[in-house]
Length: 455
Image (cartoon, rainbow, N blue to C red; front, side):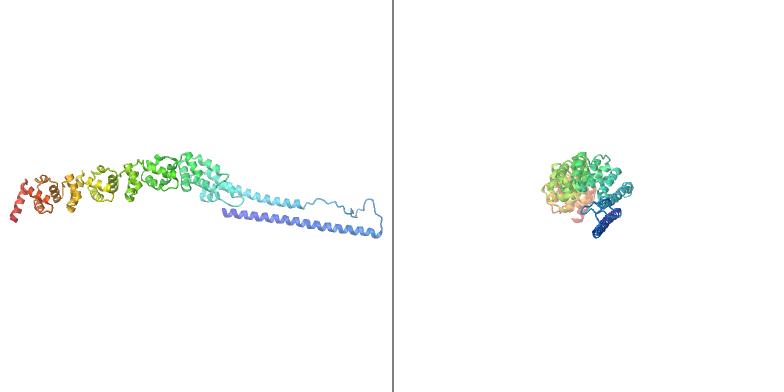
């Protein structure tokens, strides 16, 4: 359409130039012919006067003969010269033709634009920003009016985009007035998306005046809520909202940045808190650390973030009942470079309440015999339920040998004899004492058999 319009305008201009040149040619031809006629008339008059003098005819004071040119000497009476007026008329005719062409083109645009709009909004967008000479401004106005009448979210988005690009246009106030009356959420979302991309001052003022917050996408929803001050929309959001809040920390708009930091400190959705704790756990960012400590945030999941955030915020009792898969993470946390996390982890290892977690911890202690684990084992007085060897060693180490005096597992005697040679003197002492305190007859029989073999 743009190409066709341009071609029509070029053709119109060529026709106009041809008409002007034609008028100029007619005018010059008229002037040249008139000059020749006057020259001939003067020559004839001179010849007639010369003839009179030669024949010495007296001057005829009466009316001159009909066929004799009137000699007025140096006086001349000139008739009005119509050539210049004719030239002006030709020019006016040319201008009229051009104006008629423009009018026909504009009528065509007005008639076919709604059909074109329904077929392809993108083409109308090209008309909305048309820079074609003579009719470009009119085309922009017609396109804007058609988009206003259309009223779809796509059309509204194009109108909002036009606000950012058509400065000082006569139809700009009309577009703003139209946008201000919007009530459909889809159309509001379209305006907010253009604002988020351009941050144009007119659209910013419109959002604030109408208190608009987009429903989607998530980043536009969060940014528009921050800009108009509807912080509850963000604080009640989930993971996406929390993610957008952290990204807003780097926004160019300081109002958005300050409100984003304010929202981070007032999160109410557990999913949003989980995301914030995840980001702290992965990045160990000082600013995020300050937030989770001050606001006492700790994650519900995943388990690694849950444990580390609970330890960092002093909520270790919240994870004391966690199952066996927490033990490896607690052991890792006990060696963390953050002294607060390490201290809390070591303390929690002595406060476990879940038996599966206790069994996992006891197995780790049997393997490593680490001093910090030994301290936690004795603090919690843990005795494993299984396997048998771990149960025996933990009971001996914590001074609770009476717990297994009635055990019916005959394998216990073999393990008990092995414990008598353990590197830990406390275990050796407790094992020897337990051999003399057995109460289960089957265990006693096994002990006697072993004595018989080794005596």
